[in-house]
Amino acid sequence: MGKINIVYATNINLNWNNGATSHIHAVTKYLNKKNNLILLGPKYNLKSSKYKRYILKSFINLWIFIKLIYFKLSGQIDVMYSRQGYLFPAPAIIARLFSIKHIVEINGLIREEMEGSTSPKFLIKIACLFERFSYKHSKRIICNSDGLKKYIVEKYRICPTKIKVIGIGVDEKRFVTKQRSSRITTIGYVGGLQHWQGVDYLIKAFAKVLKNNPNLQLMIVGDGPEKENLETLTQKLKINASVNFVGQVNNMEIPSYMNKIDIGICYLNKFKEGKYGPPTKVYEYLACGIPTILSTIKGVEELFNKDIVLFVKPENHKDLSRKLIFLLQNSKELKRLKKNSRKFILQNYTWDNIGNKVEEIIKGVERGQ
Image (cartoon, rainbow, N blue to C red; front, side, top):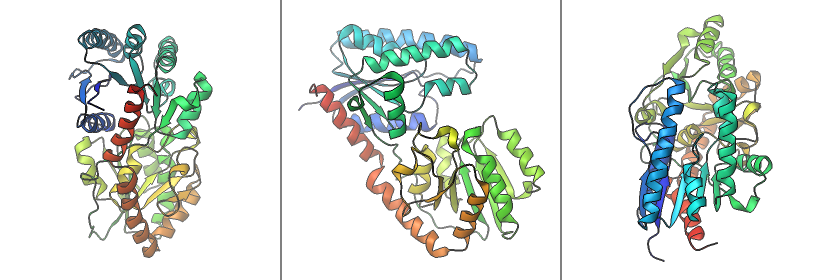
């Protein structure tokens, strides 16, 4: 088979430097090795209010709509691949109008993301209609967890065989294992500060562990709507001197912060159960060889086992504190997890692994399978 003409369309700002854009650039870089790929997405540096962003998204849709028509008429599209975003119907409409083979990638629930940003209800309804239309008129849907697949099947009545599950990749050359020599043991969290991330439980567990382990610190890298509440909690527990709120950092700086962490935490609560796979930070912890603690919720526990991570009950700071104490007192277990985690990523979740799986799906769609 010769090279496939692929157009990858997204309404995500490609000037951003975050997990979403890292994902886009890694996948498109791999696909472009053996195919003719056009990455179609906006680049802008504007800071605007919420409602101005909706207007901007409308213009982005129109721009992408026109560009896709041009690419189709000039014979530059065999397969169209779009990363589903809210209020982004252009690729699905063009695919429907011109009978283009269309693959949709989804990495989260649009309704919940919009509700989390307090979007107007009428826009949420419109976005859900666009989402349904995109799924209906696609040849394949790619999502990052079995839980998300199940949700799409039940919510939108999509045939399960149409949906393929592919996990999140990580750049194993950026996220590497490094030796730490500090006398202070750092428990680390990297990610957003939303209520479902369970950082409040982490802080409560850390306060309990700190009582008998004074050479500990908790490093929290990220920002979000719960930050002020979490800072207040550390003051209430009188542990603020041992908790470092780093704040939001550039995506390129994340590996340096990862390498300051001795134990990584991803403590999603039950709100996320069965809807999402593990966030990017989990794969990055593991790529850096960081012993990692995860909550046992559906959509996460299916992808790992006790040889890779340590599981704890969600929304239970006492259980989390017990597992932290176990790791702090068990150097053999720390070394075992450190060794296994890096190996697990190299075997399963490098961007070459993920890119190859995506390419196989594209080839199948192009062949009419």
